[in-house]
Amino acid sequence: MSPVTRLRRGALAAAGPLLFLPGSPGTALGEWVVVHDDDGGERRGQVIEAGSEVVVVQLLEDSLGLGPLRVEVELTGEVAAVPVGRELLGRVLDGLGDPADGLPPPVGEDLRPIHGAPVNPVRRVPPEDLVETGMSAIDGMNTLVRGQKLPIFSGPGLPGLEVAARIVEWSRAGRRGEAFAVLFVGLGITERETRSFLGRFERTGVLEHTSVYLNQTRDPTVERLLAPRAALAQAEFLAFERGYHVLVVMADILHYCDALREMGAVREEIPGRQGYPGYMYTDLASLFERAGILRDREGSVTQIPVLTMPDDDITHPIPDLTGYITEGQVVLSRELHRRGVFPPVDVMPSLSRVMNAAIGEGRTVPEHREWANQLYALYARGREARLTAAVVGEAGLNESDRIARDFAEHFESRFVDQGGERRSVSETLEVGWALLDEVPVSELHRLSSPTLAGRRRAREEAEEARAAALVEAEERHETAGEARKETGEMREDTAERARREARGGSTEAGRDEGEEAP
Image (cartoon, rainbow, N blue to C red; front, side, top):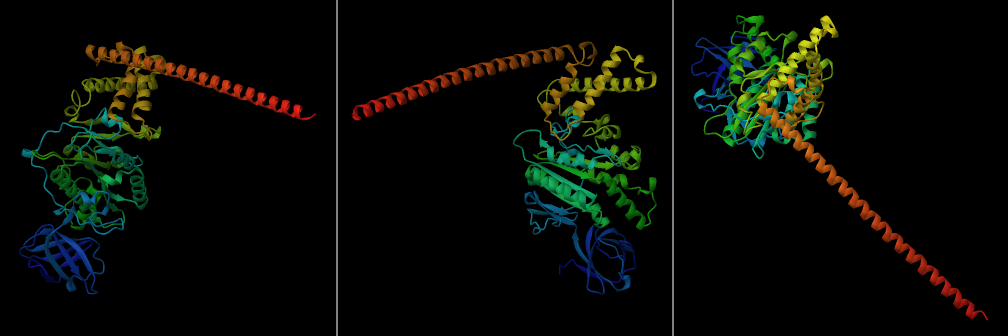
């Protein structure tokens, strides 16, 4: 037994997953507790309130069947900590960091407290390198930057979890050769979703550089509050101690906030908006603000939290508070999903506030900002023209409106919609330029003359390269044809000589037989 371990007999009361103890000097917030019942069973918990009169312990399971007066409570003196390190890449763990893949518990390179601190603003380094997600609507129009926290706002029935899984599969470091890792945190997901995700990650090979933390719907509610913190402890170690660029994908934040509301109700706290606790903003900030880049450290932590907006309401407390903390949002569209577009990203309400730091000369292409602005402008005009046509009819559109409306259709079907195909940043830029090339130059008001001239030269060079490739292919074809012809003639000559030799041999054999016959 550790010297700091203290034993207490009896508790004041028990309610749901909470156990109330008399005040104990030296009790620390976040301290692990082991509760022994009459039957010899053990239940683990954590101190969530350390007052002078009352200590509140949050159990990892319900207190059903627990007699408060007969329990023995062991205060271990240890705070919640999980193993971290490169050994955990390729592993599947539960919300407490324990193995969920049937393998032995990981030893790790260190043991770190899960309740880390947000990045000190003084030590922050401004973001300037992109993280490639493989999705054109994000990489081209709402670029994700290292150290950024960019949430995805989904809705009931929309493929928010599918988008999160594809990002795990498709994401890459912005530069080749850099250490890159992905952490996927499943919060309140079903068994079917768990099997689907793990099967896909294993088939695609991404599990080799991924750590998976899973909290299923059947798991304790308190574990849902600990799972993202355990994952972030691993992310911070890989990033700031081992130089990895880490992408943390958390889904679904709605389930996390519902767990907060449930625990607040059990503790009889005064509720805030729609029953959520008033400290939910602070609690979410304690998660999201752990993203960033530190001065004098090589790695970075980037976050993509996925949350489902109840009733598609972006003013709901969860997306509302999340938007205040994070640096933009990616919004999924129910209309695009209904039409079979994947990923169904609505680029108009989507935003990446630090996008400009990761695009442009020396990073993507010099004209990236102009290119994106022109796509936005034409698409916005096209959607407006679509609404106008629905009200006044096709005859109410002028030629410019028709061009913009057609562009909007092509933008959604050819640029946003990728099906199951990943695109690199260069491929995304080329698809966008292909759409702009079909629009008259008179409609391209957001592109400067040098940019248009550069695109014209690029098209001419591409056409010349294609023409040269065609000529080269034809020459190779002709050369191959001549070679085949010569080979065929040689074969015919050889066959003819063989036939003549065969006829000559048979004639001589006949002559010899005639001479011997008399």
